Picture 1 (cartoon, one colour):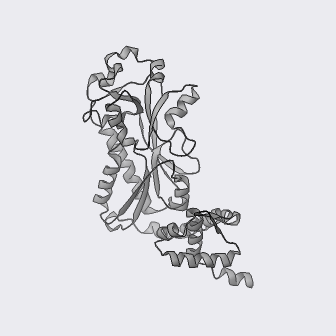
Picture 2 (cartoon, one colour):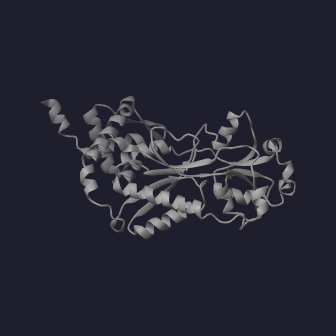
Picture 3 (cartoon, rainbow, N blue to C red):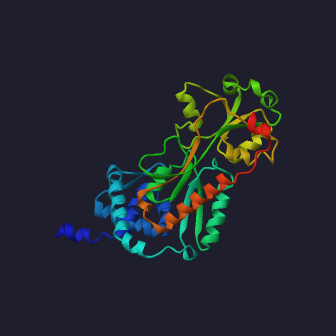
Length: 327
């Protein structure tokens, strides 16, 4: 009877509070995620501590750290929330999703490697079809754990490129793109394309984006490493959209997708040249967690992402010149 009485004190929202607190490791961030207040979440944390008999979060310097018991509760809590969502899936599916009536907040984490026009086009399309929707756009960076964000519900969708996307997530391929090099129009290789070989490519001064997570090297350098090759990276930048400006004013070489490079060749003194390395095509994906897989609103959002990517790939700008395509 005592166990039944304790169980009756637990509601689904409290399970969600537990999950968010442990994944966010912060009362203030959890309050923001839950659209609540810090005093209310603090009171719920106190209640959870009483129910579990564990402190759950303990102070560690200026941050909070989950206890071993708390970490063991993350997966069961996620499973409870997921099963609760499935419990009402039939009812949710019986109601057609109407973009014109949507008031959802969509949270998307995306790299800007795909196309500088991708996020602006996605925002424009979403707001045109669902005027009441809100969007929160988050950058993919070395400090952002997108897998934890998806698992905790902090983000609904992640868009980027990977050689091998994480296996525990749902994915949909958006597009593939040829890997090329972007150089300044006065780069020596533009004047002497026959000298652009593997040895010269590797020895050139390269600019590369900062890795998406600690220890990562990026798809270009991961592939080179598999071939036992190393290029000479002299600049790493977390601001990928600024790299074409750096290339235009230097002898740096940027290696990335043709679609991204093509957006800049008409505006800046740049040329697209072939890459001496036989890289596989860049593959771009959208990733999402099982927690949001059945949501009709998020299924609609994923369709918009797919359509924007398809449109941009099909209607990319013309190449600046035949030289750019042939070098």
